[in-house]
Image (cartoon, rainbow, N blue to C red; front, side, top):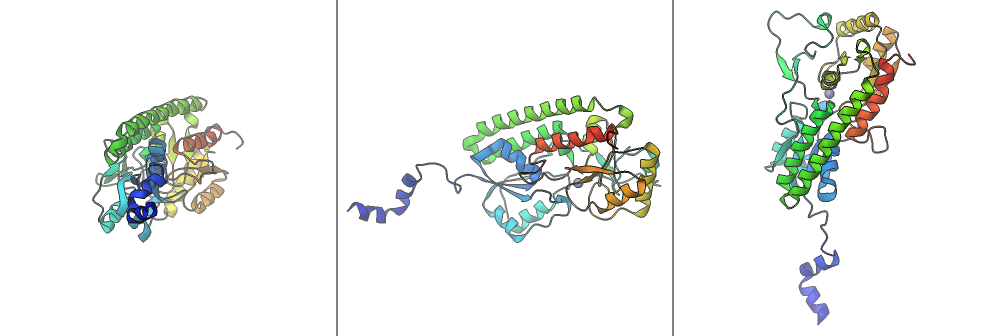
Length: 318
Ligand SMILES: [Zn+2]
């Protein structure tokens, strides 16, 4: 008789087998557009949500092409987390393709972005010599790389925590508290970075990288970042842009030249060779490393970049 009851009510029997614990199916699914946001969601939400990151470790999110299976992930999502400011616009296309109507948390919400000239060069970055003359006022676009300032990362954390609290109301207080604790850790990271950079004289705070990913980092810490490629990684820099940068590296005696973890290092390696300087390593710009790599988390990314930048700017081992 007992066996017969179980057969009649299999759905009722199931919860007792799992001990009532939340299964993967019951946890809200959160989709993050790229690896840095994925880490932030994981730091705040932990196991309370099921996380899927679309553009993974070392992926170039500027030129990312989502697969059909990525749009499929949106069908069961309770929350989508994106950067905004034109960085991960392909998420909006995925949202339309999947007909997703749920909440979207924009990590940069409420932030006043830095502006870039539309052809790529940051305002005031590189000095007058590097700016191209315009007859009319230059068109500007927002610089999307705001995560490179950890104090703005704290704003990301709070925006994400608010999104999580809305999408997972049963755990709202836990998400908000974890978001605040994480934001406080990022503000402490900012203090640590300032302490490390105190060892670098102001005149030596010049760094060359592949593309303009470090505008916010440079503005936060008084470092001039020069790059042959603009704020996006789309398109190749012109020969004139590369030649101008080589002249500037030679004129300033810059030795802090780096490649980035996403995309091809070819342009920077050629540029360094022609300028007669050595590439000092790989900075993590728009994506994290694999879990076992040097920058598996957002916080580890700063510690890794600082460990390379400080000795390079000081000219040690050049
Ligand atoms: Zn970028």
